[in-house]
Amino acid sequence: MIGGSRPFAHVYVGMLAKINSAAVMGIDAYLVEVEADITAQIPKFSTVGLPEGAVRESKERVQSAIKNSDFIFPSRKVTINLAPADVKKEGSAFDLPIAIGILAATGQILREDFSSVVLLGELSLDGSLKPVPGVLPMALRVRQETGCSLVLPLDNADEAALADLPVFPVKSLREAVHFLENGRQSAPHKVDLGKVFTESETYPVDYADVRGQEHAKRALEVAAAGGHNIILIGPPGSGKTMLARRLPTILPPLTLAEALETTKIHSVAGLLGPRTALVATRPFRAPHHSISDAGLIGGGRIPRPGEVSIAHHGVLFLDEMPEFRKDVLELMRQPMEDGRVTIARAAMSLTFPAQFMLAGAMNPCPCGYYGDPGHDCKCTPTLIQRYRARISGPLLDRIDIHLEVPAVKFKELANDERAEPSTAVRQRVARARGRQIERFKDHPKLFANAHMDTRDIRKYCTIDADSKTLVRAAILRLGLSARAYDRILKVARTIADLEGMDSIQKVHVAEAIQYRTLDRQAG
Ligand SMILES: [Zn+2]
Image 1 (cartoon, helix red, strand yellow):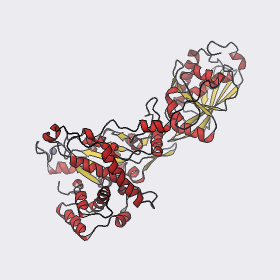
Image 2 (spheres, helix red, strand yellow):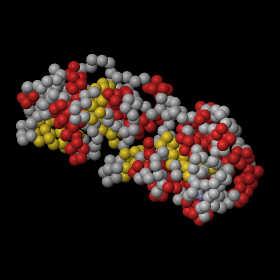
Image 3 (tube, helix red, strand yellow):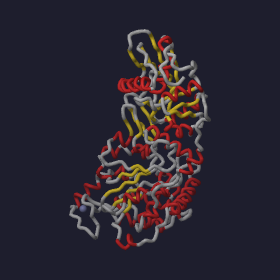
Image 4 (cartoon, helix red, strand yellow):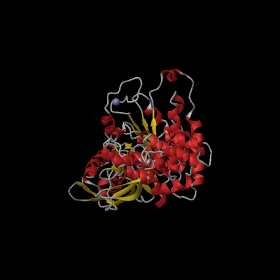
């Protein structure tokens, strides 16, 4: 019965159709019931429970899609009710359930009971279906709360199937009607989660591509091993971005649970590519310094995740860090402290996970060439001081490693020996992380050295008298601020973990002292 107008359509006026759907809120989802009611009154298409803007566009798509799929849009009063009414809803995923509701209420679908299916999808004017964001959280909710099958756009099928429920992809409104009338004619869409996970676990970049910069690579290894935030300071062209971009490749591989959590955020943010089921590698996010607070932290009328959440379980890279608006940078302090961010709006308050490693980059001075033997820097000490002060003390306090990245020497670039691949570094990092997990096994929220507080530092980072003298001398000689002391101990702990040693040695402390450039009070 697919195709062709159905002459009996108008006879069924007065029916009420109920269709199941779902919507996202934050990174979780809830079930929505779409009711379509057709009454014999002056033609009017009205919607209850959707905000005005979303409704206008949805109505237009649904009307055109119905007509262009050779069905009849009733010239009657059509009322769509979305329940629960008290939750703010938005988005285009209701197009398909609304259209099916109208067709059911006008007797254009040969099926009466829709209670065993949940429908999602945006309609194009021509009746084809387009993917929608947030499918993974919605699919997980459907599986938890119902025994329903999920009917949705083909491009969302892999993502939905991760939730392990019967998924039936369709390409158009007509295909959806055909499925609903005839039932399944093929097996539900399946993905092999384990296979998807291992196949998408590789990174497109590698430290093997980076020649020279051994000192910088070592510091990045230390940062990765202890989960320490890092800032790279160097002239333009020294490769700061290239070095930072490869940081995810030496972090321990994502666990499946972490991958699912990150995928939910990317799904809600609309960042999963078509036919992409899973984010299986650690994200690397590099927002431009002109980003707004909502873009970085999250926000909007119905709050969406910002870059700090999209980088969850991965790396947030802020290039040209002093160029970011100071008030925007300050907003990062809460997520850096708590590993999540709460966005309060008049309509609602939502919490998104935001556990990321921060990698910042900056020039050493406004012109970029301070300390560079190949170029003259014309910046005055006052200008340099003011430039560096744009990153506030409290924010700098959360960055354990300050790394100077010099311009690459020509000799190093010309060397065509391949550098050590990321997988080799990652193995050392994973061993060091393993030691930390073992050490902190009685602390539920502590799993990397970077997250130790002052009490933990006193307990786990004891050093001998010799090392203490060394740190004190460094603080005096280099003019390091007092707050540098705890950072040095934490980083020294990580360096000892990389060496597989229980006690922190003087040589570990000495290396950690090098990573406090920005604490030096002399410009
Ligand atoms: Zn300069």
